[in-house]
Amino acid sequence: MMNTAKALFAIGSLSASMVQSQESNVGGALPGMMLLGPTLLEDIHSETINTTTTMKKHTVSRDKLTPSEITVFKVLTHMEDKINSELLLSKTPANEWVESSTYRFDGLFEALKVMVQDGVAGKKFYMGDDVNTDPRYGLVNLAAFLAQSMKETIMYDACDENNWDLIDNKYPLSNACGQLGQDYGAYSCPAGEEHLSCDVDPEMRLVAATNANWYGAPAPLFCEPKDDSENGFTGYWDYTLVCNNPWADPPMTCSDYEGQQGGGFVNRAPMENRNGRSDVEGCCWWGRGVIQTTGPW
Image (cartoon, rainbow, N blue to C red; front, side):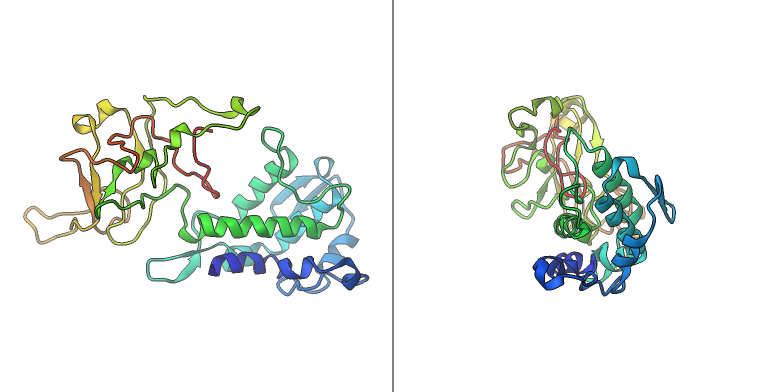
């Protein structure tokens, strides 16, 4: 909840102030812009917008954007340092808030540029239009999106879903197929969007890019054909195993993933997830990205 609140506040204390009635704000500068300065939005409005508007190292093209959208991009570039240092924060195992190493302003800006200018499958990220020309509409929408993203992934510095569904004090490796009884590979697109889905490929091999980093945390989720797995099944992750013992003969080190401090794979017998899977064939569709898109699309 702390980071959700930060997200809504840090886009200039926008959330509460921007939804005030038009009557209470006539003739005034954007209220609540404590992070940006009270007259910043007016200053931006008064600037001449050229065909290509360059903001520090970031560039957007006017011919694909409304004036409202360009203004939102300008507001963001003015806040670049604060977005990195006060908004895009992750919580460490020591309960400290630090700048995220996965989510940075550059990535946010470039992703927004694609989704606002071009979109995907006919859908775009809303940051204002020719009717709602007030850029505060776009800023509030962005603040809400970042609040959701904080709760989903940014606070964990995660890009891929973690293995977190504990069964009998063990983490099944087949949680890659679905956690809490879900079957990620069975997800389907709604009617009319079937063309956006991908085929579930049993020969696909993939290892998640991120995982939890607490002591003994499970390794990144992975998928592979049954033939790749020992005895054709997968076991579980034991978070209590000791893997770092330099005094052992021979010395023991943790090597399943970078930064591992404890825990390890146990594949002596099959271990089912809550949906009855004890393999990871075709199970490459765990939550991915800032809002944890899940399923074969």
